[in-house]
Length: 277
Ligand code: SIN
Image (tube, rainbow, N blue to C red):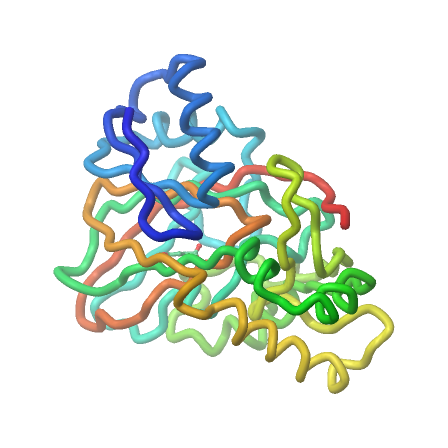
């Protein structure tokens, strides 16, 4: 097995492993170490049945059945991330981390590409370790004393989902978009022990004890700061590519630059734990 970094701060491609086969403890240990070191790991040329995909995800923890994404037929554990040639909106085009609206946010997600456009539809990832490390000592001290509210309401609630051309087909259970969670703005990552910035432009609503209006300027600064090219990598998908990202120390953003083509991915999200400062 070989681990090839894609950028200095985030992302590594792993070759020499077949994810459709049960992984030995040594293989799993090496992948886990790369995941801890690089925040997101990529695999190429995989052929995964839904059962293989589920088995790989279950090596990392219990599977979180997504409340809002339309599932793959007969596989409620697998969420469909689809854009059809006649659709203009895609899923996940704002820099974000999945499930930060949960009390125990997801550990990570395993995304498997089935159909990709001839060009475009890349996903960018950003290291929230690098973003945190690059802040001034004064800003670190300020953020270190703060918590922020995250919510699913303004993303998966009926008002927003109805704006999608086919919101009802791509999303479900809008009435269940009622999650609000309070997390430290700077977390200590449960695996690496490193400090990471933990707010994101999709789900974070405001700092605890601050109004939305007071919070937004500082949040906007952090969103701009966190997506600086130096903290990111960019992955070009092909059918058979797999990404496994850590939701606690990375953001991701799915580029929407491939109108007129289908992009079809299967995503499984793995349960995580409560986060602490
Ligand atoms: C997501 O945000 O989970 C989807 C990412 C992608 O489609 O690249």
